[in-house]
Image (tube, rainbow, N blue to C red; front, side):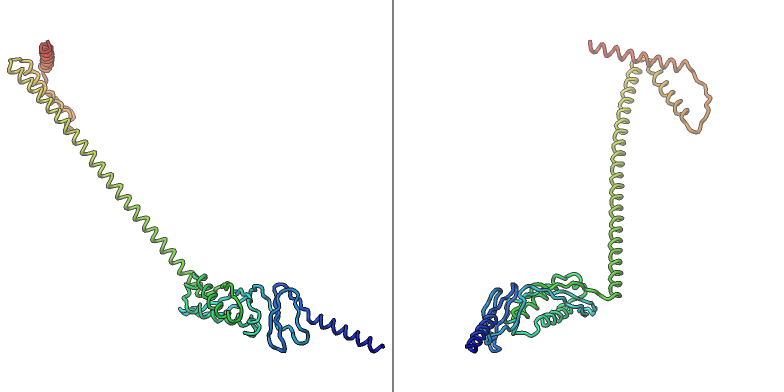
Length: 310
């Protein structure tokens, strides 16, 4: 009787142990592979799963979340024989647990070595200037190559980012000198262009000034010629009037004509810069008589106008 109870207890213990061994809890973000006698059979998803105890066992436990892995610094020789130090990061995610577990050994090491090799290949085919200015292009090429290579492993490489590209110190100094020379060149070009524009504007201003000055002189000459023409017309009219008065026997007209020329001669002598004092005989009565003749001529002209109107 006692032996039977022990057997029952032993069976119950074995049953509980088998149940415990057959129940597997998979955390969220993880997947377990199941092997039966060493051969892959299926994959356990997150949650509570059952396997056959003793026959089945858990093979690999894989993280299905996206992970990041640092790419250590390495030296790369560019196409123009410049040596630079490069590092970066890789973002990847396991999509197929069975392939990641059984298609490649040491998955993370394989991805790391594949990335480093392709970094040297892609960046070694470019010039230094391209490396420093086209980082997005480098990232895209690396992502395409590495993602295609890791697809058979059940892995999706989502991003590859180059963090730092460090040229040697002497090369950095040479680049700084080149940049300084280029900036000085642009500054000199801009300064020369400014001087050129200033000279053009100055010449344009002088041209406009000369045009306006010539226009002013032309207008002044035109007005002066018009004034001389009017003066000549007035002089001709006055001469004609004097001539008519002389023809009619008016002695006052003769006196006016002689006095007018006499006064003009005196004005010319007085305005001469070479003479300071002039002593010459002058008959005041002749001048006064001439003025009287001018008055008589004016009266005669007014009387004629009134007669003509009447």
